[in-house]
Length: 63
Image (cartoon, rainbow, N blue to C red; front, side, top):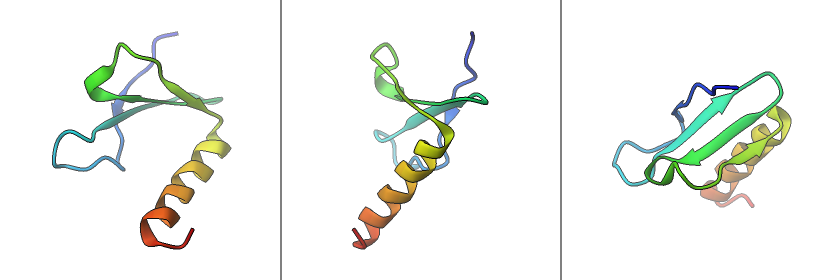
């Protein structure tokens, strides 16, 4: 299956920290834009929501 990759809305606009995601009905795939040839992370949609929430909490000091 061909994935439709796009820059994550959570990526910064300062370069060097860009993450791309591709969503399907069963999974969210994530990869490093600078190293597309390396492996990707794959989450269920629920696990991805938890992952992003945990990152937000970590960044705010609420972990």
